[in-house]
Image (cartoon, rainbow, N blue to C red):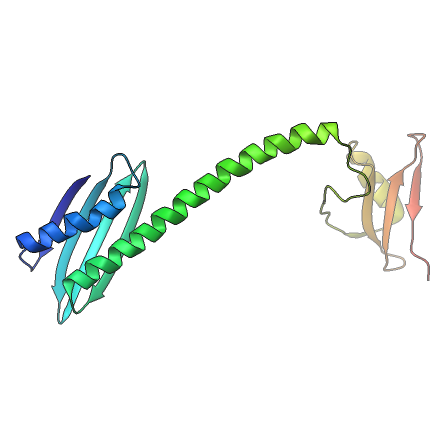
Length: 175
């Protein structure tokens, strides 16, 4: 791992340098090649450690402050390790899901699904006359039905194509 340590208004001692390098080994185990930029600074009574890690095109960042510089560095390493683990888990889950989806497609063709809702579609329901709904349905040749609010009754109705392909049916609720 390439490490660049910078001190702002703070002299980087050999002890701090060694400590940062030793702690970044925890991060290095996750990647083959990684770069880390460490900025250490003091503001009033606070010791602030800021660590950027770049690896595999991903960027991870942690900034913490504490009364003790070593504690601040430790917190940063914990935060970065959590971010990296979360990212890796997410990637692994996506890869696993992708393989499960391809497996599901293969098994879906083998076993037929019955009596289950397998697709949900959302439609915008507009108020109109049944005659207008038929005209709207004619505009969309791939659709078999159209839900709408009947202007005359104020209730939801459905206009649908009949099997003869020439005529339409109207579904109205009772009462």
